[in-house]
Image (tube, rainbow, N blue to C red; front, side, top):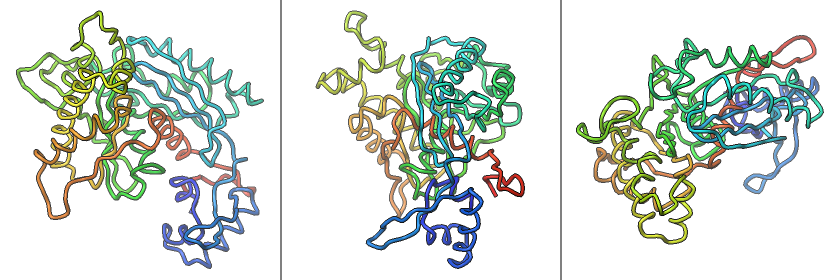
Length: 376
C-alpha cells in the first residue's frame, strides 16, 4: 500500500484497493492504523461527483532532495513525503563542468537551502541525482565513454555521500524524467512509455509498468546515438552520423551565422516563438530526425506512449508535428495504431521530480514500533 502511495503520491481508498489487490475493507483498516501511527494522512475529496477519502504519505515523515545536472543547468528541489516541493533553485553551468567542482557546489547549495528551511543537510532522508549520461547500476559510474567528460570513473553517489553524509541514488536524466512522467505525469496511465529528452543532448528513458528498463550497463535508451547517416559528422561518442549530430542543440545552433545571436537553445526557441522562419525550419527538421529515431525505438520496444521533454520540447508542435509525420512514415504500423506523442507534464523539472521519486523509493520511516520501509 505504501509503495502505491510512493509511486502515485495520492490515491483514494478505492484506488488503493485496485492498485494493491486488497479488499476495500482491508484497505480502510490499514489506512486507519497507519494514519494513527503518523505514516499516512487522509483528507476528503470529490472525484467523479462522489466524496472519497484521499490518502497520502504524511508530510512530517521528512524531506528528500532531487537534483538534476543537465549539460547546461543545475536544478535542485527539496520535497516532503507527498512530493510537495518546499524549496527549489536553478543556476546555469559551464558546458564542460566537472564532478569534483559541481558536487562541492551542490553540497553548499543543499546546505543553504536546508538552512533556509530551518534545518540542515543531515535532516535529509535521501538525495536523488540525475546526470546527462547513462549510469551503470552496478558501479554508480558513467557507463559510456565520451558522453560526460569530467565525470567518468567516479562513483557519483558515493562521492556525494562522502560530502553530505546522506544516502544518494543516481541515474541518467532521461531515466528519471521518464520515471516522473510514468509515476505522476503524462504517462501515468500508460502500461509502457518512452520518454525522449531533447536539448543539448538527446536520450530516452524506457518505462514498463511504472518501472525503468535500464539494460545491463544502464545504456538502454541512448537514442541520441542511433545512427542517422553512417557517413555523417563525427559524434562525441566517436561514431558517425548519430542523431545528436543532426538534432542536438550544438548541431542546430551551428546552422546559423555567428552574427545572428543564436548562442543558446533558448535563443532558438525565442526566435521560433516570434515567428522566425529559419528558426522554425531548423526545429522542424530536428523533429523529423528525432521522429525517425523514435520509429526505431517503437519497432524495438513497442511502447504505448511517447513523451517528449527537455528544453527543445518547449517548441511544442513545431517539433512534435514533424516527429509524428516521421513516425507515421517509418514505424511499423499495427491495427492499434502508433503511439501518441505528447509533451512532458513537468517541462525542465521532470528530471528533478524523478530524482525525488528514486530518493523516496529508498526511504524508510519510523512507525513507532520500528522502521518501516516506504516500499513496504
